[in-house]
Length: 86
Image 1 (cartoon, rainbow, N blue to C red):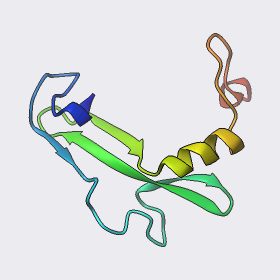
Image 2 (image 1 turned 120 degrees about the vertical axis):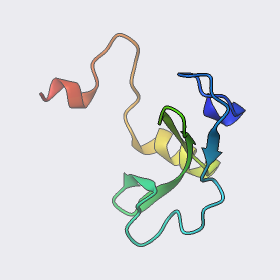
Image 3 (image 1 turned 135 degrees about the vertical axis):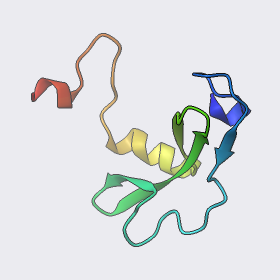
Image 4 (image 1 turned 180 degrees about the horizontal axis):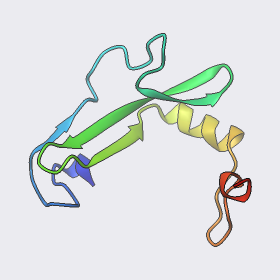
């Protein structure tokens, strides 16, 4: 987990965080994911500059709750809706 400061892929400590970057929820939602037609969740990004591994986290706990209310839960052993439409 990059949040710990160590890369899980290459074990480097060259990990940087974009958590303090302003305008994460800009007009184009460039650092966010859609939750619904009218809601987006800003993301905090962590990058290992040695191997390029990236992890992204929703930074607002309220948005996590909103996701549980609006998105479909993936159950272990079952295909997601995207996989069944292929």
